Length: 185
Image (cartoon, rainbow, N blue to C red):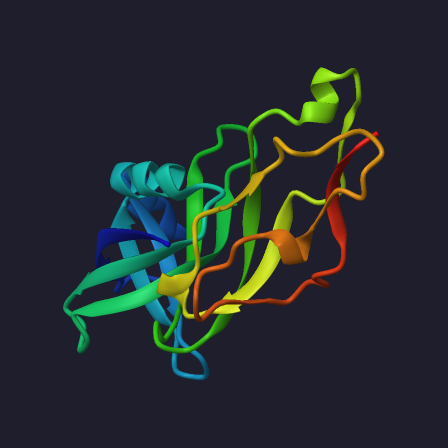
Protein backbone atom coordinates (compact mmCIF):
# COMPACT_ATOMS: atom_id res chain seq x y z
CA UNK A 1 0.00 0.00 0.00
CA UNK A 2 1.10 3.51 -0.76
CA UNK A 3 2.52 5.54 2.14
CA UNK A 4 2.71 9.35 2.20
CA UNK A 5 3.98 11.73 4.88
CA UNK A 6 2.28 15.11 5.38
CA UNK A 7 3.27 17.89 7.78
CA UNK A 8 0.49 19.68 9.66
CA UNK A 9 -0.17 21.80 12.72
CA UNK A 10 -2.90 22.04 15.35
CA UNK A 11 -5.55 24.58 14.45
CA UNK A 12 -6.49 27.10 17.13
CA UNK A 13 -9.05 29.21 15.25
CA UNK A 14 -12.68 28.22 14.69
CA UNK A 15 -15.73 29.69 13.00
CA UNK A 16 -16.71 31.00 9.59
CA UNK A 17 -14.70 34.23 9.56
CA UNK A 18 -11.44 32.81 10.91
CA UNK A 19 -11.70 29.86 8.48
CA UNK A 20 -11.99 32.28 5.55
CA UNK A 21 -8.93 34.19 6.77
CA UNK A 22 -7.07 30.90 7.21
CA UNK A 23 -7.87 29.92 3.60
CA UNK A 24 -6.86 33.38 2.36
CA UNK A 25 -3.49 32.90 4.10
CA UNK A 26 -2.91 29.73 2.03
CA UNK A 27 -3.93 27.19 4.68
CA UNK A 28 -6.59 24.46 4.55
CA UNK A 29 -8.50 23.39 7.68
CA UNK A 30 -8.90 19.70 8.50
CA UNK A 31 -10.13 17.45 11.30
CA UNK A 32 -8.63 14.20 12.55
CA UNK A 33 -11.15 11.70 13.95
CA UNK A 34 -9.84 8.83 16.04
CA UNK A 35 -12.48 6.33 17.11
CA UNK A 36 -14.46 7.86 19.97
CA UNK A 37 -11.81 10.32 21.11
CA UNK A 38 -12.11 14.08 20.83
CA UNK A 39 -11.63 15.24 17.18
CA UNK A 40 -8.36 17.07 16.59
CA UNK A 41 -8.56 20.27 14.49
CA UNK A 42 -5.63 20.65 12.08
CA UNK A 43 -4.37 23.02 9.43
CA UNK A 44 -2.25 22.30 6.34
CA UNK A 45 -0.40 24.34 3.76
CA UNK A 46 -3.00 24.35 0.96
CA UNK A 47 -0.57 23.82 -1.92
CA UNK A 48 1.29 20.95 -0.25
CA UNK A 49 -1.95 19.26 0.82
CA UNK A 50 -3.42 19.57 -2.68
CA UNK A 51 -0.29 18.02 -4.27
CA UNK A 52 -0.31 15.11 -1.81
CA UNK A 53 -4.04 14.45 -2.24
CA UNK A 54 -3.69 14.61 -6.02
CA UNK A 55 -0.84 12.06 -5.81
CA UNK A 56 -2.93 9.55 -3.83
CA UNK A 57 -6.23 10.23 -5.65
CA UNK A 58 -8.12 7.02 -6.32
CA UNK A 59 -5.59 4.84 -4.52
CA UNK A 60 -5.49 3.25 -1.10
CA UNK A 61 -2.91 5.13 0.92
CA UNK A 62 -1.80 5.26 4.54
CA UNK A 63 -0.89 8.83 5.40
CA UNK A 64 1.58 9.61 8.16
CA UNK A 65 0.64 12.95 9.70
CA UNK A 66 3.48 14.79 11.40
CA UNK A 67 1.53 17.11 13.70
CA UNK A 68 3.30 20.10 15.20
CA UNK A 69 2.38 20.84 18.87
CA UNK A 70 0.66 17.48 19.46
CA UNK A 71 1.08 14.87 22.20
CA UNK A 72 1.70 12.22 19.52
CA UNK A 73 4.17 13.49 16.95
CA UNK A 74 3.13 10.99 14.26
CA UNK A 75 -0.29 9.49 13.47
CA UNK A 76 -1.30 6.96 10.80
CA UNK A 77 -4.50 8.03 9.01
CA UNK A 78 -6.73 7.46 5.99
CA UNK A 79 -8.55 10.19 4.07
CA UNK A 80 -12.21 10.02 5.06
CA UNK A 81 -13.72 12.97 3.17
CA UNK A 82 -12.57 15.86 0.99
CA UNK A 83 -14.71 18.98 0.59
CA UNK A 84 -14.03 21.14 -2.45
CA UNK A 85 -15.43 24.45 -3.67
CA UNK A 86 -17.73 23.40 -6.56
CA UNK A 87 -16.81 26.16 -9.02
CA UNK A 88 -13.06 26.61 -8.56
CA UNK A 89 -12.27 23.07 -7.26
CA UNK A 90 -10.30 24.65 -4.39
CA UNK A 91 -9.92 22.55 -1.23
CA UNK A 92 -12.21 23.69 1.58
CA UNK A 93 -11.79 21.00 4.23
CA UNK A 94 -10.41 17.48 4.70
CA UNK A 95 -11.44 14.83 7.24
CA UNK A 96 -8.93 12.16 8.29
CA UNK A 97 -9.55 8.93 10.21
CA UNK A 98 -6.81 7.65 12.52
CA UNK A 99 -6.13 3.93 12.17
CA UNK A 100 -4.10 1.24 13.86
CA UNK A 101 -1.85 -0.19 11.14
CA UNK A 102 -1.76 -3.58 12.91
CA UNK A 103 -5.57 -3.99 12.86
CA UNK A 104 -7.32 -5.47 9.78
CA UNK A 105 -9.58 -3.11 7.79
CA UNK A 106 -11.72 -3.41 4.65
CA UNK A 107 -10.49 -1.86 1.38
CA UNK A 108 -11.67 -1.70 -2.23
CA UNK A 109 -8.76 -2.56 -4.54
CA UNK A 110 -8.88 -2.10 -8.34
CA UNK A 111 -8.30 -5.04 -10.69
CA UNK A 112 -5.66 -4.33 -13.35
CA UNK A 113 -6.07 -6.34 -16.56
CA UNK A 114 -2.77 -7.52 -18.08
CA UNK A 115 -2.39 -8.55 -21.73
CA UNK A 116 -4.84 -9.00 -24.59
CA UNK A 117 -7.25 -11.92 -24.49
CA UNK A 118 -6.77 -14.56 -27.19
CA UNK A 119 -10.51 -14.51 -27.86
CA UNK A 120 -10.43 -10.76 -28.54
CA UNK A 121 -7.75 -11.34 -31.21
CA UNK A 122 -10.12 -13.86 -32.81
CA UNK A 123 -12.93 -11.27 -33.04
CA UNK A 124 -14.54 -11.67 -29.64
CA UNK A 125 -15.57 -8.92 -27.24
CA UNK A 126 -14.08 -8.59 -23.77
CA UNK A 127 -16.83 -8.27 -21.17
CA UNK A 128 -15.79 -6.86 -17.79
CA UNK A 129 -18.32 -7.37 -14.99
CA UNK A 130 -16.26 -6.13 -12.06
CA UNK A 131 -13.29 -3.74 -11.92
CA UNK A 132 -12.52 -3.88 -8.20
CA UNK A 133 -12.53 -6.35 -5.32
CA UNK A 134 -13.12 -5.92 -1.59
CA UNK A 135 -10.26 -7.13 0.60
CA UNK A 136 -9.66 -7.32 4.35
CA UNK A 137 -6.23 -7.08 5.89
CA UNK A 138 -3.75 -4.84 7.68
CA UNK A 139 -3.37 -1.59 5.73
CA UNK A 140 0.29 -2.14 4.85
CA UNK A 141 -0.47 -5.66 3.49
CA UNK A 142 -3.11 -4.43 1.00
CA UNK A 143 -1.77 -4.09 -2.59
CA UNK A 144 -2.32 -0.97 -4.72
CA UNK A 145 -3.98 -3.14 -7.38
CA UNK A 146 -4.46 -6.80 -8.23
CA UNK A 147 -3.20 -7.95 -11.63
CA UNK A 148 -5.37 -10.33 -13.67
CA UNK A 149 -3.72 -12.02 -16.66
CA UNK A 150 -6.39 -12.31 -19.37
CA UNK A 151 -4.17 -13.52 -22.25
CA UNK A 152 -5.49 -17.13 -22.07
CA UNK A 153 -9.19 -16.23 -22.33
CA UNK A 154 -10.98 -17.68 -25.40
CA UNK A 155 -14.41 -16.95 -26.82
CA UNK A 156 -17.25 -18.74 -25.09
CA UNK A 157 -15.22 -19.89 -22.09
CA UNK A 158 -16.38 -19.41 -18.51
CA UNK A 159 -13.94 -16.55 -17.89
CA UNK A 160 -12.01 -15.67 -14.76
CA UNK A 161 -13.52 -15.72 -11.29
CA UNK A 162 -12.48 -13.62 -8.31
CA UNK A 163 -11.04 -16.80 -6.78
CA UNK A 164 -8.51 -16.91 -9.66
CA UNK A 165 -6.93 -13.63 -8.55
CA UNK A 166 -3.57 -13.85 -6.76
CA UNK A 167 -3.83 -12.47 -3.22
CA UNK A 168 -0.97 -11.61 -0.86
CA UNK A 169 -0.55 -13.52 2.39
CA UNK A 170 -2.58 -12.22 5.37
CA UNK A 171 -5.24 -10.75 3.03
CA UNK A 172 -8.72 -12.22 2.61
CA UNK A 173 -11.31 -11.53 -0.05
CA UNK A 174 -14.74 -10.33 1.07
CA UNK A 175 -16.43 -10.80 -2.33
CA UNK A 176 -17.75 -14.15 -3.59
CA UNK A 177 -14.74 -16.05 -5.04
CA UNK A 178 -17.03 -17.89 -7.51
CA UNK A 179 -18.15 -14.63 -9.18
CA UNK A 180 -16.99 -14.20 -12.78
CA UNK A 181 -15.44 -10.79 -13.29
CA UNK A 182 -14.25 -11.00 -16.93
CA UNK A 183 -14.96 -13.18 -19.96
CA UNK A 184 -14.82 -13.09 -23.78
CA UNK A 185 -18.02 -13.42 -25.85
